[in-house]
Length: 150
Image (cartoon, rainbow, N blue to C red; front, side):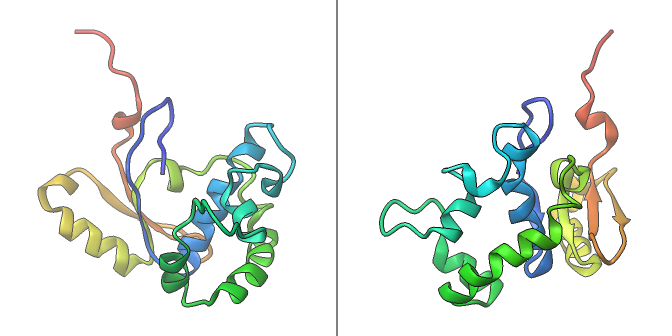
C-alpha cells in the first residue's frame, strides 16, 4: 500500500473480506484522483485485469490471489464486479486504514502482526473498527506529519 505525501510503506492485510476491501480500495485510486469514472477504464488496474484476464503479461499474481481468496479463476472473475459494487460507495474517499496502518484485518490477525513486529510496534496501538471495516494497527499520527523546527 501507499502512504500520503509520497510516503510509501507496507501494510499487512488479512485474507478474505479484508483483502477484497484492499483490492477494491486500490482499484478506486484513479477514480478518487478523477482520472477515470470506473476502475475498469484504467487499463493498468487490478479491476481491469480481473474483468478482462490477459493471456500474457499479467500484473496480478493470479495463482496466489486465488489461493488467498480460496477461489478458482472463473469464481474470481464472476465475483469481483459484485465486490466492487458492494464497496464502491463506502470507499470513494481516502481511508486511513489503508494508507496509514501497518496491519488491517481481524483483531486476532492485527494482534499477531503487532506481536511479530515486537519492539518495532512500540507506540502503535490496535484500533477496533466496526466489524464492517476492520481492526488496524495504527501508526503514530506524527509519522505522517512533516517535522519542522529545532
